[in-house]
Image (cartoon, rainbow, N blue to C red; front, side, top):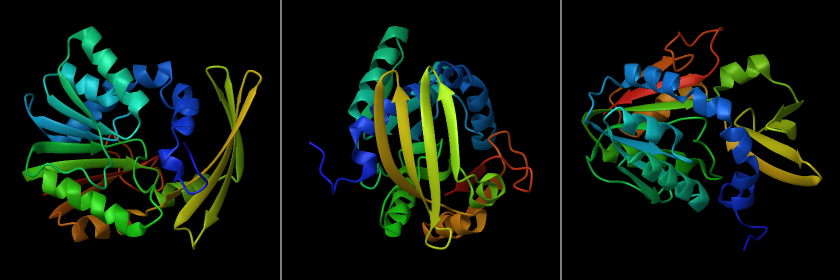
Length: 250
């Protein structure tokens, strides 16, 4: 049962309503190319252990498993995990999918690499929780292990920002209203989802990071080396960047 005090990211209705958009057929089809880029950034050999933090229905976990990696996928949304397990079973893939809060999950020196993709960072009201997540990742990596984290960077958003926008995908129309707050540290969002005759409204927010701010946080969490790119393809993080992609080494 949801209450007014329940954080938006714990609202199963939100994740259910937007699943057809977040995980559209086109996005699934683009997964192999994304993983090609991720592996180039990670430089980890098949057979290595990878943690997919905020794995959703297993889009990246399953592709990595197909390529011979040993995967653990963590998410807080039970329905997504059940979907991921069903997909893995149909293909005969061995993937460990677990329901857990990323502020709490850690497995000391268990993974060669950790991935956190598709702006799955900065959800929590307390900024200290972001540092906790990165410290958990650092603890879970083997010495020399790498993290790849991918999100919408503050610099990119400044170039493309629009207060209102609408989109249509899989027959679902989404009307979005955005507001920048706290000196560009947070973006609050109001989304109206029109699915046939059903109208649903969601309000949520996430913390924004520049490359420098994220670099300082990664170093504070204990990482020894960081690099930044403007997409998963590894382009420079400059005026042509489309995303903020960081690699960090333990």
